[in-house]
Length: 239
Image (tube, rainbow, N blue to C red):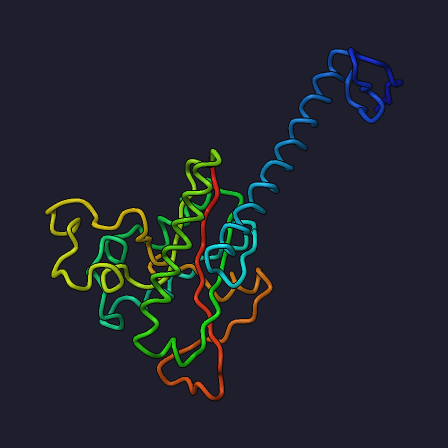
């Protein structure tokens, strides 16, 4: 490979670090392409940083930008939703079996490279009480706000996922989900988001990628032994 000597083209000095062009025109094309790549990389970094700030300003304890390669899917995790393990199974358009599940999410993930994951730190005592409903509502709210902010910044395909069924969170007083009963549109389309568990998203590995330590909280967990837990949300960022 041959290194071309430096030269001035217009007002910009190019060719100094380019080794593949056979002439000035090719070197200029390479220069512009690499400059655009650097610009795009800087732009997405700035967008992700601003979305992290949005998350924190709206109640998230922390938020991180992650690669979608850190978002893993485990089909077995959806077992926590079915077989009557979840009392809200099938009650919402955002829950199994009405979502695309692990297979659909894996296909969706192919179109994304970046994501924002956020958490809300919650005392275990609250997570195991009825007060947790309000925290789950906040989780959905933060996820939807990040998604909306990303869309407003030009990332129109951004898609948010939260935790917990939207049925008891936003439509507890209603018998049916309007969408499932084909009686109308979703009552809370601007805030209710699909639950990660219905897609088999491995939250444990996701929090590990974000650098957070997560203790799994169950109804058998002793709040004195494990004082804090967390709820997590995920927003895929895409144009």
